[in-house]
Amino acid sequence: MLIKSLRGEAGATLVEELVTIAIIGMGIVILVAMITTGALGVRQVDDNVRADSLARSQLELIKDAPYQADPVSSPYPAVAGIPGYSVTIEIEYWNAVAGDFQSALWNDGLQKITVTVAAGSSQTAQVSDFKVDR
Image (cartoon, rainbow, N blue to C red):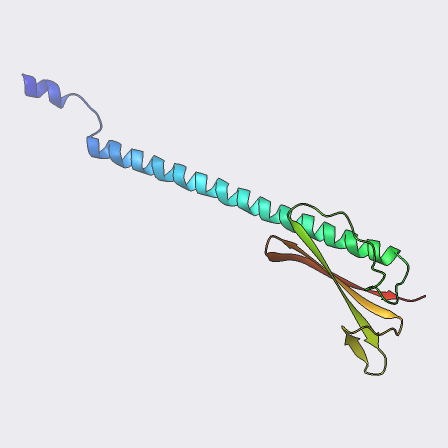
């Protein structure tokens, strides 16, 4: 009589339940990994956009300023920094005799300005343009 009553009851075995829990657990782990990866991607894009904006702002500020024949002794203006970002300005001078740009001070009326912005220890954005003595 006891055997007949047990056969009539339907249910899941312990192995089936454990497999179901394992599949659900793997799904949750994958979901958390996707959310974490997405958040890191958004942060990286945000860093790149901030650095690019800072570099372009610095370059525009230099382009709006009067031409400086010797920007070492009379430097171009600088934008206010953003915490965590560093701005580096490199100026190369056109040498008409040699026909190229050089880092030594030479005033033929053309400068190549390169602005590099780094977040932490890695370079994030770099923009270049020319400034002409008019």
